[in-house]
Length: 460
Image (cartoon, rainbow, N blue to C red; front, top):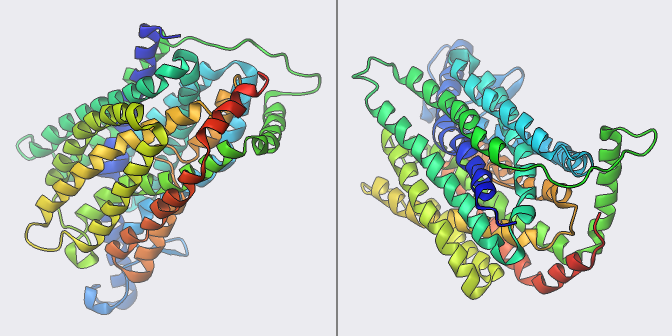
C-alpha cells in the first residue's frame, strides 16, 4: 500500500480515459451527431412533405432510424441511456469474474483497448452514417464502464483507509488535467482548421479519433506500474468463469441485503450521480443548440473554450473537495455539492436568455467545475469504506453502473422531455428530480454503521 509509483500508474489511467469523457462525451460527439441527424431529418421531411421543415410547422424535427422517430438532439442522450442499460446487465457479472479469476488487470487492459479502438473508429462517421456514430459510442462507453470496474476496485488495495479520499481525489484531478490537455490541443487545432485547409467536419472527426489514440497510448503507464493482486481461487468442479460469475452475482445480490446502509447509499448515489452524468453528457448539446430550441446558441470554438475552462477549474475543485471532506466529513461534503447541482439545473432553465447568455454559461460552468470532480471523487472513496474485503471488483461493478459517463435514467428522461416538448430547457429542468432525491436519501445513510458492517464481514 501507498506505493507512489503504483498510485501514479493507477491515476494515469484516469488521465488516459478522461480524454474520451471530455472530447467525445462532453464536447464534440453530441453536437456533431445532432447536426448529422438534423440534416438527415430535414432531407426525410422534404422527401415526405415536398417542402422544407420550419419551426412554424409546430412539430419537433424527427429523423427516422428504420421505423423509429428520433429528435436529432435526443439521439445522443438515447445512446448514452442504452449503453448504460447494457452495463446494468454486463458489469456486475464482470466484477464477479474479476474477483474470482485474478484477471482484473488483464480484463482492464482488454476493455481499455476495446474502448480506445471504438473511439478511434468515430473518425469514419459522416453523412448518413450518423447512426454508426451511436453504435461506436455505445461499444466505447460500455468498454469504458467495464474498465472502470477494475480501476475503481484497485483503490482499497493501493491506499489505506485514511488516505483513500486523498488518493481518489488525486486520480480525479489527474483525469481532469489529462482530459483537459487533449481538449486544449483539439481546441487549437479546431480554431486553426481553416488556415490548415481542413474542413470543419473532418476537424471534428480527427478530434474524436484523437481521444481513442490518447486513451490507448497513455494507458501504457498504467500497465507497466499497476500490479496484479489477490490470490488465485480455484474454480469448483464443473464450473467456468461465466457460470461462477453469475453464481457470485446471485450471491452478491442476496448478500448486499446484509449491508443495509451500503444499499441505501448505493440507491442515493445512483439517483444523484445519474443527474450529474446527464448534465455532463448533454451540456454541449444544450449549449450548441439554437436559441429557438431552448439552447444557448454557442459556436463550437467558444463552447470548447468553456468546457476547457471547466476541466482545469475542476482539477482544483477535486482537490478542494478532498480537503472539505476531511474537515466536514464525506457525507456533508456530498450534500453541499448536491445543493449546488440543484441550483445549476434551475439556472440552466431560467437564465442565459439575453445578449449575455454566453458569458452566463461560462459563470454557470465555473460552478459546475467546482463541484463536478469533488462530489464524484468523495462518493467513490466513501463507498470504498462500505464494502467487505476481497469483494472490491464485485461490489464496484454495481457502483460503476452510475459512474462517470454512465447513466441511463437521466439521458432517457432528458431525451423524452425534449422530444415531447421540443424544448431543451424543459428537459434540463426535469433533471432536478435526481438531486432532490439525493438530498432526501443521503442524509438517511448511517455511514459509521456501513463501515462497521463491512469490517465485520469475513474476507471472500
